[in-house]
Image (cartoon, rainbow, N blue to C red; front, side, top):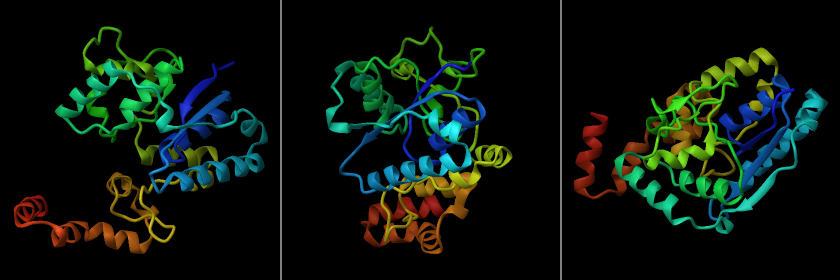
Length: 249
């Protein structure tokens, strides 16, 4: 029998794909974790998506639904501080863009003694830059940081990356093949929903469009996405306008 997994389930496309694939196709027991940030407007939508997907999975595959354990929810404010991890994260961030979640997720895994917490980083993620060439893929298919890595990238050693060489469109094709695409489409991605729908201008919306998934944006969000540079320019000082012009030229 396949080993059980601990996974960060955000309610988004990538982690939802992994939860469904692991439970339906691999027959794994899944222990999902969710970190709630009360200051982020999308938190309730993410949790609602997770709840809807779990309920719908019962009708699709009751056995798979039973393999997904109760969602463990932890407030971000309750994650213990670990100075060394935060300092390493800050040094990495000074080299290239890296989301703040990699700081508190590493602290969460370390202080809760969670080994090999699955993160659904995929080939188009910004964090891929820090992992490329620094990971091994053991027989179980779980990409993991090489033991020889001793620099600040060590903060990734708390995780495994089952989707590292997979794209969002790959996930869609796989979900269609195994019959759970309808559930996957119920996932949520926008950080700043407008009237209950994706905004089109937050980073997750932008990445969704850029990674071949723009069909998931409603018409209003697509319009905001296409005109986002001009919206920013209208609020920006002249020095910023020149940078924007060069970017879209």
